[in-house]
Length: 300
Image (cartoon, rainbow, N blue to C red; front, side, top):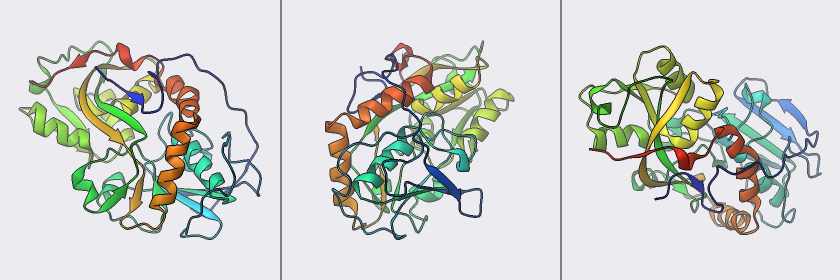
């Protein structure tokens, strides 16, 4: 059965194929800690990203001149690497955005941290696209638009190492979820826990709650919790995953004039191996193991 994998690649638990070399892009802040801009100065340089394809092969109408503005729930191990927003210069989604900026002929890439809950509710403004491991759902389509899927994901179970949480007793325990996520919906609709799940604003708060013993297990996208477990240096572990059939897509403002052009570029990146390379370079390393080895649990 399918667990977690890119829609354009084999299982992520593969040997790192190639390290991307630093290109030395100029990085400048924009006056606050939630936004930062990389200026390629017309070259192929966006942080540590290796760009592919033809520069200027698509045309976009962007909210800022000469800039692709991408929002997300930042940082996120493997996807947006860096201790702060200002330090992000590589990762699957960051470099995916860099490749899109390059193919659009845009010298600048601006990334901005936003509330995930507000983003999927259609309340975020002044951006061209969002990349934040966002599961495509019919409910979200009512207020935002999505690209074709670029990554498939399940719901992972993150616990303290040595925990006695199992698929048989998980419904009796204190669970934690991230606000506004499909993981939160999955817990309520399929696990039906006896205790009301505690809701947290972001991945950092959810991870901290597990480590502090405020919750017995955190349930959110397996791609995210695997990164958090690897980051914890053995303190946390992903012990199971629930198959959902969900996929990630790039999110666009409702009615975006750029949807067709961006969709075409994303499909090209799937076909030409660009997304395969990003998965191998960043996600397999960040996960620290093979997602296929995580037991597949069933909701009871």
